[in-house]
Length: 568
Image (cartoon, rainbow, N blue to C red; front, side, top):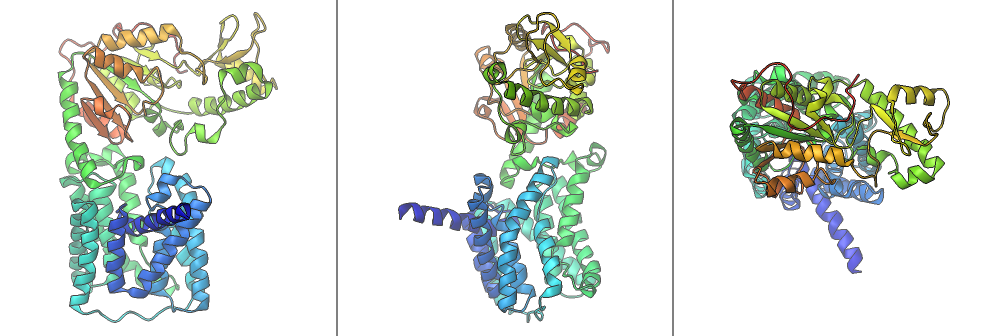
């Protein structure tokens, strides 16, 4: 019984968090207050939302969806919206109830699919799955008449309860709701001369998303949120009659369109330069309480000062600097480790099946690398090197994009090797990767060394394989030759790369970490920035001038020579 009670409490808390997520609040207590507020304003819709949230959460839990995601209400949110829409739009009855249950259950797998398709591309899912379900069902259900206006006291009580719930989680979130409400009321007065629930239903979440959640709270984000909320409200006003004529409710379509469009546009540096403060979208993996993202802006200013003062900068990079090039990371929800089996060195040496699987995956990744181009981070680091600010890059990546961006090979320490070459496990002879790929394309399941007939493997390290001492020594020398270690786009959970931070601390070298999510070493860093790495580096590049004595040509590195081949 205690186990059943615990599971029921888990599902209840997750469903309550799903209620909160309709305004980006992940707190179950905040979600409960939102339910109370909506129950005052629209009792039937509020109850239907609670039912939908529980059903979607139960299905997500039963199907083994990521625990952290369903506990935060990211699946319950879709079910809650389904219930709210059904309760507000359609006449209650057996048919409506059956379709409600079906849609709430379908909302979880549709949300999962949307997460898998959109999240790796840093596109927020928002209410897109629910919109699809609602528009599919609308032609087959009887529309409910418009609700009668509520007494002012009732409206104030409902909104007060919802604002109280948001303030429990985040005061900035509550302020963003007030901003969106003000914009919506103003737009309603100008466009219709009255309060329009549909207009508020789009202006408020748009203001919250752009003012405090997907963008860090700042003067720039509030400006974007104000304009975005007004545009979303105006779009609802303009499109609602057209969609209604087709039998489709407008719902929160404008909110989704404006929010996704603005976030996508602000990922472009040329667009961000027109916004005060050059506000940049947060990585979706790093979205949380607005207060945390606000603190990130302060951390970014501290990072600029540290880099400006540093005489010599060394950089440690991970998969997060190459994801913008279309290369998958390893440890994210959609990383390579989640999509293919972990093949260890022991497996490779003793299992023909493991070797075949290894080369299939290796070839897939190699083709991705060959089609990839350097990202903003790679180009920014190359520019810092030319300005005399950067001595060396130590990278866990094997893609050669640092060299493709203009860093000379001697300034790059490829800690985990390079995919641009292969090597015999017996005699150590290096082999060009194109030659290996040609053999695999000709039908060879496993390539062998032409000199000693030993097994060939890729140039990057396998699980259970030690990093070459020469590479580790070069990394340590690069670190000790600097007076600041900048860590970019890595979760810091794999040694020996993570050991560099311990060595830096022992040598008295400060560490700055920029990553989409928290790392185990954040508490030991002089500054930690949870943000999009590319946006941070572009802003940093604009803020750091060349050293007076720097040369534009490549200069010798203090890191030692990299043994990885440059990107072709």
